[in-house]
Every structure is written in C-alpha cells, then in structure tokens.
Image (cartoon, rainbow, N blue to C red; front, side):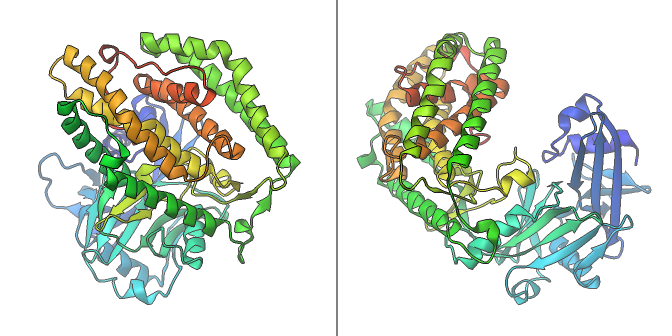
Length: 514
C-alpha cells in the first residue's frame, strides 16, 4: 500500500478524525498491523497515523477481500488484492468470533499488541450467538454497530481507538450500571480490549442487548416538532404542552430515568472509582479556578471569532462582551457562595459525561434507553474517569432541550420556505410559537429543580452553555445565536434577539452539540 492510496481511502471514511491533517498533507507516516483470518479472506487491521505535530491517531479497519468492485465502493489494494470494509459483510461477526475462538479469546499481533475478550455477564449469552449473521447499522459513523442475529445482540466496534493506562471508562460504567440493575441502558454483556505491552489499552468493541427502536430522541422529537410547526402554522397557533401530551410524557419519562441513572451512579460499591466523595472547600476552590479559565477562554473565542458572526449577532456578542467581566464572575461567585452556605454541599460522582438527546434511544413502545457511556469525547480518558457534580448530566440534557431542540426545529421549518420573505415570516412566527412548549418541556425535565433553588445546577448549566458558545462561534457561527441567547437568558440581561434568516445558512441538524 502506498501512503497516498491509504490517506485517500481514509479521507473518504466518515469515521476518520484526522481528515483536515490529510487535506493539509500533515500525515507523516502510516503503519498497519494486520491479522489475516477467515482463511485469508479478511484482515483485522489496526492502523497508526503519525502526524507532523507529533500527535498519533489509532484506528481499527477490518477489511474483506473482493474479486471485483461495484459502483463507487471504496477499496484498498494490499499485496495486489482489493479489500473493502469487512463490516458490511453478513459473515463479519461469525468470522470475527471464530478468530477469537481460534486464539482462545487472546489474539496476538506481530508487534506484541493483543486483542482480548472480556465478559461482564455469563459468557454463554455471547457464545450462543457466535455463529449468527450480522448487519451493519451506520457503517460511516465514528463507531459501527452491528445487528447480530436479527435483533439478538448489538456489537459496537470502535473505529477510532483511544489508548490509556486507565481502565476503559465505557466498560467500567457499563459494568457498574449492570451491577446496580439499572434499567436506563441496554444490558451489557462484554467487550474486546486492544492492549499494548506497555500497559496501555483501548476499547475495540462492546457487546450489548439489541433494543428495537425508532432512532434517537433528538431526531424523533425533531420529526414531531416539524410536523407540529407545519400544522400550527396554518392556524397561526402556538405549540403548548396541553396539546402535545406525547412530547410531555416522553420528557417526564426522560426526567425519571435520568434520576435513576444518577441514583445508580451515586451508590458506593466494591469499585472505589464509584464511591461518592463529599464536596469540600478544596473542591470548591478548584471548581472556581476551572471556571475562571473557562470564562477567559470563552471570552477570547468570542472576540477572535467576532467577524465570522452574522451582523445582528455581532452586535449581540459585543453587548455580551461589554458586561462579561462584571456579570460572569459575579454570577459564579454568587452561586458558589450559596453552595458554601449549604449544610450539605453535595457530592461528586461518576457521570455519563456526554448526555444529550442524541444519546437516548426511543424504543418501539416509546420507552427510553441511554447509550454511549464513553464520556465527553473532547476530554482525555483520565478526565472522563474523574468524578463530577452529579447534576452535570442534568445540565447537559437541559441545554439539549432548552437551547437546541426548538432552535433547530425552527431552522428546519424556516428552510422549507419558498422564498426569503416567507422564510423571514416563518422564522418570526415559529420562534414565538414553539417557545411555550420548549419552556414547558424544560421545566418538566428539571422536575422540582430550578436555577434559583439549586446553585450547582445553575453553575453546571452555565458551564455547558459556555462550552457551546466556544464551539459554535468557532465552527458553526450561524448557530452561535443559540448559546449566546442562552447566556443572555441565564444572566437575565435582556430579551433574546432573533437572527435575520437572510444572513445565515440554515442549519439542518443540531446533533453535534445537541
């Protein structure tokens, strides 16, 4: 394989997280470790890409030999043979499990690395299904989930690999929730870990209960809201909670299951990584210092990205920056003073860490299951395994509902307008019409919690909001009005201002930061 062919192939793979480096020709070298199996018809490939800045990216790329290529199918040439993505082959799971059985669950590569199977529950559950066919669901994602045995098992194989000396966070959390008999997640049966001789390890895949579902809650609610906006627009009628019992029932269920997840995380057990720790003054001082850094970084990001913002939003950003040094630290200090005044200042615990509507599956009977307990992708493995204020997950989901759910539904609804004038009218109506329902849904999710009665919640909502601002002004300036309006709302600065539809390219999805 030549480097150009490899990088071209990887660049076409949606799961590749170093496409920009490929485009800028900053990939210094790529190495592969290959394990042939299935009588030589397949290769289990682990790749290592060295970047010019010294960074290293690891990836998993199972390949299957092909005699001929059809259509626009991506392929690599290895030793004169053509190979394509093996995960689309119906016998991938069966042949992969045969490889593991052949090596007694311990496959060793020539460089000393090895792939090991780890079971959480009775291994008979997995062994009974090892000869089943599999079907890939979303092959182009950062991880690929296989439907094994037509709904008997889900196997999530990681495409991009993250090595750490720490115990794999997702495995550890899934085991913990299984020990607690937590109903909020699909049952976890085990996984595969790739290990280096130096002790570093990375999750290669996890085996889960297959839950028949209608997709994630983000897309499900976007579809419902899109329909409601169309119908109510004809009548010029607001969307209200009493007219949308399905949405409100689902949100209340989400609230209850989030509480169950938090309760499960807060129970001490044999693993000290899950033992709750009381908040003390040392933690509060460290928390305040982290906020100080975050406030500085966010202010700098807004200032540096100001010229990328639509004109109306630039004025709004300027107004925010003008009061930043006065309002932001004062808000944080006020809330931390309230925490200090509490007899019970709370505890820090393990959390989901990346909790939003896209991480919630809607089952066929409209129940909910939470997925992807690997933690916040932007954090290191060590940071993901740390303990945090338990309301961090609540704050993340609250912002997904309050900040983004309605805003993106309005953007999609506006994008369907036949002309600019209609789009302007649609947007003005939709923003006003959807607000009562989103406000009701946000309150229903929080239950008896409010920003006024829970200082930790208001702090964590601010923290999440600041991260959203940093992301949007840098990467999606046309959507930056969502978190900027969120800051105005949280700080009680004034009434949010809508962005002129003519100045922005309408967003089609909000899943990146939902």
